[in-house]
Length: 362
Image (cartoon, rainbow, N blue to C red; front, side, top):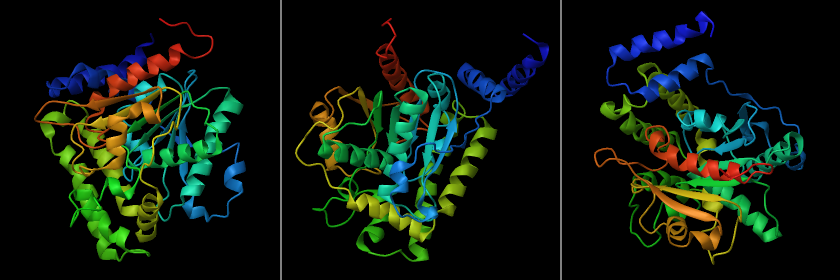
């Protein structure tokens, strides 16, 4: 090994000596990140046939980015309301990149259109299959999982299925009833209280409502960042600052139209009806042990996927992701509890790879 390549390792060893609580996994991960820093570049779509059929303003177009790798199993990730997928998967990207390229689907800031987003997503899936000869895995989180469920419903209605190697849904939010109990006199969750003004209005909310929303989303992020004893086992101080800055930028950049159109997309999604198979390939369904700040207790999507996963996904497996009692896993907490999600994802990907054409099971 050339001597020059040891410099990042020695630098990180010195950093760890100043922070004796930093475990080996941070040293190994940050060494890899310094040798090959996270760098998702804009993806230039080769296939655009679905999105080109739609008349939509450019500001409603999702920003799709990619980190290219040569592995056999590329991944598409779709995030929640905030942060962007590129930030949400920061701690998990290393494991995903060992499988193949990772494509990040980030929502537009100043608008949103479900049909356009799903057209971009399906064009991307077709491109990976037809141009690169790979079936991608798809991971979707919270609101993004709701969008993917809508895509699967449309395929089921048409008697088709997207060409995916596997599917992971994390803390799905697939309808307004997941956040607001229609039978309750007032919202029972923090996020339900935030979104109620949007759901009651047919137009963009005023700036005061938007600013309150920004404050709550920031507090939800900070509630994880303030747990310094747990955080030092996950991120360096530099990484914490960088991620916080990126999340703040995303929250502050979403304007009233962007916020209301995202919520409008959620409002238009139907609550789960009679069970039917939506995807017959390998499926991993993950909920956090503490969903209560976001999902209301009678959430229909939560109930269906928890109690009858095989009715919706014949090869589906439902798991609850947990941690220690003093730092429980929160809704879609991929940044601050990434190490709790990683084992389930690793096992799931191992099974998918063993089933790929030309691969022998271990």
